[in-house]
Image (cartoon, rainbow, N blue to C red; front, side):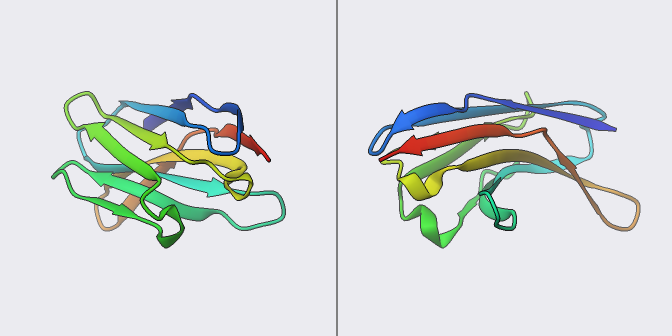
Amino acid sequence: QVHVAESGGGLVQAGGSLRLSCAASGRTASTYAMGWFRQAPGKEREFVAVFNWSGSTYYANFVEGRFAVSGDATKKTVYLQMNDLKPEDTAVYYCNADAQGDQRTLRYWGQGTQVTVNS
């Protein structure tokens, strides 16, 4: 089992910045990537960004260069630096860790951290 815990959410004014942190613990040897999703009220959870242990990163189109994901494969941590935040970025942000199971990918989730952006 992999335990995922994120932190760093909060309240910020539009145009401001926040940095989210996330760490995986437990049976992390089979993990190969960690990333971020978000879920706004009344909407489905959506992909934000991912950091692979190879160092590659991918972003959702709506990020538009405002967010940067980074991580440490040794420490099993991932970070999301969010700049120029907009009210539409308001959501619960979830960290995930992906691991290779016997025949499929296993995805582990954190409990989420609230990000609120005021206009």
